[in-house]
Length: 92
Image: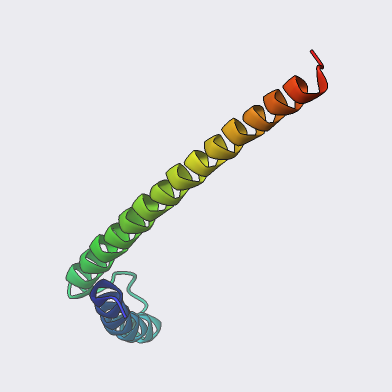
């Protein structure tokens, strides 16, 4: 498994645990603020997710370029075959 994904899972687990604790405290006290201890975890989670999204985006762009190249190759082959067929049959 990718190291980035493993770290994201770990941070997500820690964050989920701390969010549940904050929710319980909020239900008990009725005060609507999250503890400051969550901010670094939220920031780290955001950074990891942005990194993962960026990496996924680059992979998708690479795949899209490869697909576009393949389509262009097929288009050239099709044009070549149609031209050859027209030459062979004497069609315009």
